[in-house]
Image (cartoon, rainbow, N blue to C red; front, side, top):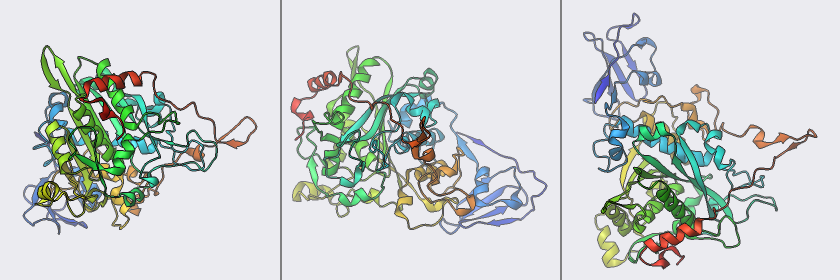
Length: 509
């Protein structure tokens, strides 16, 4: 690891000058002309680090000071350590201090999850409400992400006939694209050769949409554990609403005639066959309820053994990694233990002030010493456990964010990505390492301090999608036909059934 150091030679610098911020005190050393900071009052007085800068210290504010942090850089390239970044060693030694490659990768996958929100039509006045605004071929281009090197492989849908009524968005119009389906996310694959070289492998991404009305769905959780039915072990259970969202289907709907589970598994199978023989990774991401779906998908793929490959008589596993943002608990302790056994790697990014990651399982969870006894001996029906490694962030450490009691701010995905950009480890100064635009925080929230002049909830379609027709009237234009299931989905599902031990596992309980 090498440090980028900045010299301090500025005519306006005054020796012994002290700068007082809302969270920290900064002191200039007279002899070395280095700026030292001391966390106050959140950290011990002995917690100090050197900062060398090339800016006018007489006018520094907390946000400006983030420019001066001594940044750690990893001299290795991502392609050399990509398996570590994907969690092969459970991110040991990469989170504190935060490895710069890992920070960039978490943010990158978080932006894939954010793309689900930015492209989702949740306007009840639109007859396309509940669908994706863009065709797959233009998805990343429309979102300003064309340079990411990925292409949409297929869209994912789920039926509204589940136990989470507040999750689905429906049109107020009688004639709509579908009365049963909601667009749930997408599968994408890295196709750009330069990006594949940078990553060190071809990456398959599954991104699940969370809730547009962020917190309403949490009140609909019944805390009912349901057998996963993805294995013969009846003790492995997951929350009923999540299970239904993943497995339910509606035969009368073109988009939900296959369950979300069948759609995603068939597409993964197809892509793994298409890119057979290449170095591949499967990365699954999601925010909020989408984070729960991400973990369920990862477990399902691993349980079915879709990621197992044989080359020259030797078996190997394609790594499965979940980058989860503000996700709730998904299943019981047995579910968590089975994910660990299967080698599913999960990095959970949470804000310590967010309530969603604390449910379900308020009374019995992984923090309870006797949880295993409760599940096995007492069969306690409300026992849940988080999967994977937690990366806990705190929005009060960012000098850009205002104090607020709005729970949706603490849960906001863009706020999580902002906090990731400034996080360097426990007890370290908040500093925007990648200079990610702070205006993105207010894209769909009101979280930035007012002095930054960014209006709240500023992102919206120009004129809400209305355009003038040839007669000069303002109308909502027709969209191209929404993508339905590919013709070969049944073919790939049959192959999965052949792999699975017991063809009934893919069918609804």
